[in-house]
Length: 444
Image (cartoon, rainbow, N blue to C red; front, side):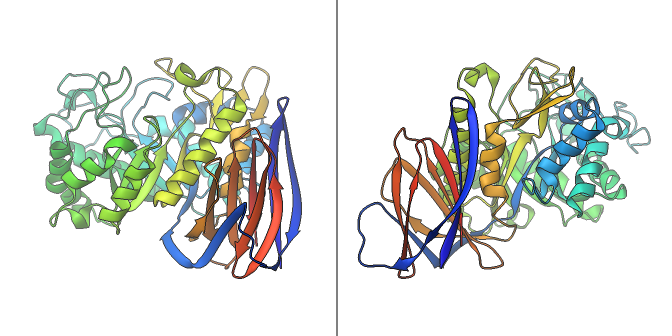
């Protein structure tokens, strides 16, 4: 028996990925530098990887030449790429839009006659169509609102927080259902939604505040009945959609005997730190809910000097920690951005795994793209996490078993020293080393 190993190093700003194999032998009692994998001990099912097609991503994509458009889409959705099967996009505008917009803005139009996806049809939908064409299958799409139309808000604005006026709760629920139905009419596989992106954040961009009780009441009394009325109750609704540190409190406040059937998942972001134990706590207390990472990116306002290796390691560290804590799916933020880290209508510029120089029609695949691929290229939708142990806190590891019974082990060495590995599995041992500052995927 052999294990196939794919290792990526990054030295002197040069990426190098090599493949090699290691032979398994009978375990003779090795104790040191051991990593143990237990395929028969199974945890949560994993549904896949993806990223967001924002208006910013779609607009940037539209400015690239035909060959680079093919390269970008193939890099994410092609069989030789990162094999994404999930997509998130926004209901109406978000910060990563070219400007603010809504599908309708008439407070008297209760029948939504003026409702139009014209703005989505300019940049988001064309990119989504090409992604599906390249993937050769329907992608599972999540919709998330950043703000209701301004006339529905307590502050009369899409920005600076504000809240949904109680008298517009029914109208807003109908609006969301219309959005889903219009996307489905166009043939897209809308399977998931979140109630509100970052409901605890008052932002200079599109945002809306919900207390836990407001989110619960909107879901229970307005959104869920509207989904049922519109025959959309197959949509999987996730609550929270914000940072990890308060996800348990939000889940505990919203999910009860009455709302349990209405909530399929808890969505979370990474911006307030690891909080892997928060994910684990939600997994333990709400074992039937899907725990979905719905957004994370390298913000220039916080990490502009970190460098590609640190940024890529941040992705791998988070993916490993999240999966080990019980995560069911990982959806990155923008698929692509321009050379400025936008466009972003409030200047909230960020990094993306693939960056585009729209002035010179040039594409740069960042190291973070490669690191994500160390997971997404090999962990198949439907895989299950299996048990593993490791010998050092300098080493991070996660192990998965695919539907085809292949085992995938991802090992991250963030230290400045080479690490030796004695991989033990079902009475066999294979020995190999992890270079300093490297990531390795093993398949057997």
